[in-house]
Picture 1 (cartoon, one colour):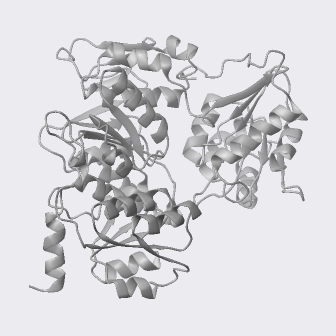
Picture 2: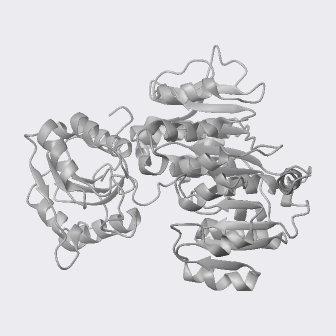
Picture 3: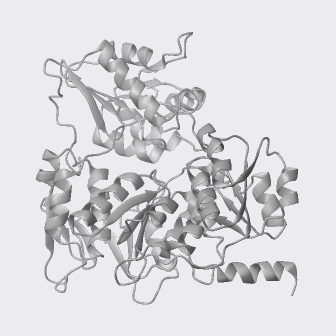
Length: 519
């Protein structure tokens, strides 16, 4: 048997935490949150681990010797000598490593198996099992926008229904940390990026990832610089439905997600469950006369429906923006697939709060509402924000990630009161406005010597707005050209608003933070 065949046979046998991983030569690409979770897991399993990274989080780098892991930190324009000499039997890449990265290419050209952290997590998911002896069910969530909100919503609903559930994956807690948590879970609600799904699509395990339920919320241009094309991005997202056992949840208003489900290779018996803001058919969730209903997970679904909540209740909770209602429907479908009662879903919604920088009202002063949706890092997300707040003063721009902003400006630009353009790629935004919304007042902010972009933005906006206006930070672009992250961008916006505008007499907002569904 050749060395390559021997390695393949060994990897095929490694489908349990309790398999013999000892001495397996594993190269881990990247040393941030995901990379460290992989290295730590493999070290715990007794593998021989080498971490390869261009740069490293200092805290993680200091921990590597403690857990018995070697590292090679430095330029990666080509595979480093340490990696080649190590001759890994498998390479496990962090999601930041694109298909065109030199080390990823070298791995594939060398015929070395290439995994992501999701593949590894599935193989070792039985470290902690439920009382009956089974590992936690997996529920997978992806989409261009709304992933984190839907993941948190679904996990909150499941917990309210009595399940031990945890949001993990791309949401912040690495899935390997959740798998190894000694307390154990009934359900892992896993947010997956398109990068993680690309790696998942490479899997050749004899026991491939097979979720209880999965959803792709929507699909629009994003991360094209990573994938190389929209088709490649779409194909990566579609892997979320592979081998689904019970429920393939899709967006009826987004044809691409329906086609993904139609083309998916699923386990016999898996159902397609649709959702949108319209009247649902059997096997769908939707809205009827202001009532959010389930017509999918009940025996009499052809003649009746179950009430989950109402748009009026969501309005009171600040959760009635159309795209948030869509996320609630998707999360409810995932929870209902695990028999979470409607009353538990309603109770979870009463306790749920959106994350910061997601349609967050910073202040309402003198009749002007200032809204932070810094998480709108692509045109699809910004379109939802602009639909919720038409006629706003729009703060737009940043790193466009290879995405053309023209269609967004064409559709939404003419409706805004004014636009304030930030970021290093202002030329593309300016050109789109000049062509498709030439009558909209356009202002540009160039970082001055202080670097305080948002102070200039707020000062500009103050000179534009009148009673009843909304100033909306929905950049439709990434933040890394001028800020540390989208959170940093949102925090600096909020700080500038508080500094220059204030919070109002009582420190609270006096405007409805969430327009009703369908607005």
